[in-house]
Image (cartoon, rainbow, N blue to C red; front, side, top):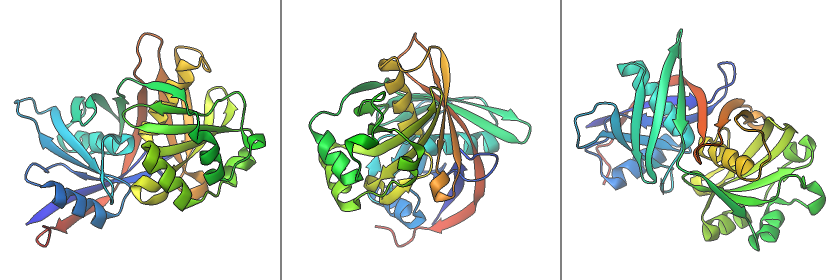
Length: 291
């Protein structure tokens, strides 16, 4: 038995970079151990596994996300990759994805040869990080002078929880070098999916890096769920005008430049995240030895 695994890089900038994700469109017969084993073999930070729902609507699908280490409740870049894969195979249009954190609407449109996808996040919230802040700063090797007081350290949610850390200068962001083991332990204890360290070039343009030890990787080049949580954070703290589009540039320090577009409105607690995805190729994965 073989499993067709599509590979896409989501949120590329000018056709390059982006964050690789695996996409399995026919996952109905796969067990949890098989999905985890496939994600581990693919080696990307996440692989999305999609199945038809019990209804007859072909635009509605169940999706589950696995990192090489565990199931993840929601993943933005794998959602964008999945939506583009579906649009390229079956045509662009609206999708309804059933995730572990609820229904995520996605729309796709074709602009010439390129497909653009927009996801609508689960409802967002944010709160001060509180007591773990000092431990997090120690693991990140950041001092109080490195932080931008305009952007308080918070935990923000948009399907997963992410620590938000704003730094005062781009040089601080570029030099980020954290203690992997210490941060991994803290994130496991607190239930944080990524640590979103960012620098504000202006109120609507941000540069970001995302530490992702829970996914088994040191850094994520484009993180849609964190971008959605970040948008909710900016809106909740009135740090951006509404309605507004925020641009998040990520992955440049990794040689994988990525661009995420984050749209915010005042009449909803959700966030829209938009991007494209470029095809990396098709690889059949032989799962005959899976448990």
